[in-house]
Image 1 (tube, one colour):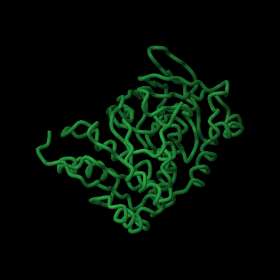
Image 2 (cartoon, rainbow, N blue to C red; image 1 turned 90 degrees about the vertical axis):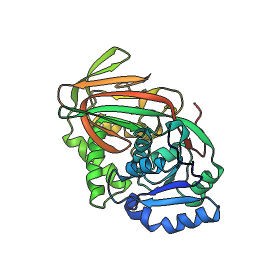
Image 3 (cartoon, rainbow, N blue to C red; image 1 turned 180 degrees about the horizontal axis):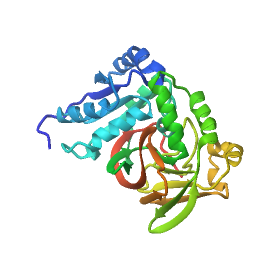
Image 4 (cartoon, one colour; image 1 turned 135 degrees about the vertical axis):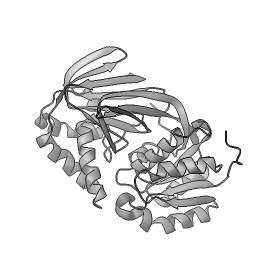
Length: 317
């Protein structure tokens, strides 16, 4: 345990590139709202990928236990990974809030965190807290095994391809919901389903897999509901397996992805579990909270009530 006194300020991490530069452009406005609400903060801007994790680990060592992520779901993911890759205090002692300025803002959508800054700052002022489950994904890059934590949704297969294309465009300064949707449609032309074993609680589902989504949260891709019934505090992962669907079936079923009825499709299976293993004949690539990762074999587990978050509206089943 650290011997430093616990700081009262919120350590605030700003991704200046989030939302096509909204993080940088809107920061002075957000800062004025913190000052108006008498919310004490210490702030730092990230300059490169992965830096939010470093900031979190360093600031925990300096006594901070409250964090605000100003960015998109990827910035929040880095904050969570910073919390779970330090050993100075229990992650349950730490609370994380969010000012959404990203493109998708899917995690905030689930908790009623508004895009209007006055509203999201007001939620931090109110400071209602919830112990949130945290997902863990173990994946491979070549023969090397790696681990990543996620707070919202992780995906394998088609979803990871779309995310990878979108992330490459983000690196070039291009980011919008329209770009994500274009990548979704264009990827249908080249994507090939993969023979895979999906192993849940020891039960093996063998299929040509289009995608696998694993969620604590309900939304991804700017409002799609891949795991529409997921709860962030039930100690279980919601798992959606889309099997051998043709590209035309996928296009005809896009409405189901957005209206929360995807599990009604006969070629879509839904499960709940605290563990999952996916093995495939050829590599299936993975993503978590919109961050591109490695490939199969991939396993998932969960840390129940892993850390505290600030919410606006609490989900009920």
